[in-house]
Length: 365
Image (tube, rainbow, N blue to C red; front, side, top):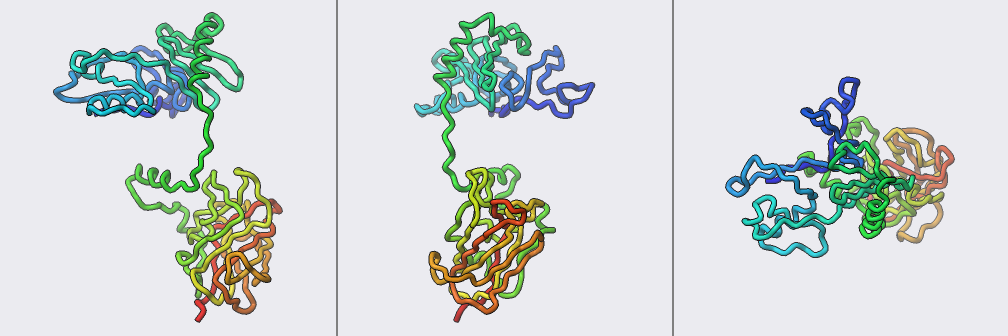
């Protein structure tokens, strides 16, 4: 059994009596020695973690080892233990000789190559007892001898340029530029997050019960509708176009802005699933407290093709209202597809957004 953590402790609940937090996770209660920094930094307080192993009958209890290793070494350890091959495209060394003893493992414990980390504006290198921290925006180095200065208080970078030169070389060999993500859905991420809370079902926002919803007679069911086209969406903060017709007021479609600004007109094309006699439309502005993207001048079209629409079936200017707003056709219009064309926003900005868009109509006979 392995017991460990994913990062250093946080200095939570700090006060005058507890400057490193009430629980002081980065301060030794016996000696008073502190680790600098905490979670989110590349000082020792952010990198050092507990690691305990238990294997009754195979690992003698009460031992303490000073081997320097990382969590990614566990894969190589387990593959050696199972008699399997460690994939070549992975990092890490087996720590089995340290756990079982070199005689039982059949070989000596390998030493770890230099460690390299990067997070935010920081890069760090561990080279034996030397620890280097590179602050990228300042292009400055800090160098600490952890054997003598575990709290990282005395910067020795000026005194040891030869060590900094080696660390610069390690950074150049280790750093890989970030590759832009290509995913278009957060489904797996959200599923994993729900599993951590012991459920497999999407949980509605606590505020959803008090939010307005699109309801009404002859409302085409949201589950029957399908989005077949849209001008833009903002993927980086999960404001996808499909959310405009999901029937959930706690989700929001937003036109692209942080992913590259898209300006009016903003368009959505909806398949009703079958030909309907469409009598009108419903619009629900975002329910999260903001007005960015709320529709003002808007046109609705009805057609028999997702790419060919005639004149607008309805024109309307919506207002700043959290409640459901309506647009009527005057007389029913026959068609299977609906195009929503947003021409302006309530604050005069370039965006478009919606909690939900509904269609009122009866299936055509």
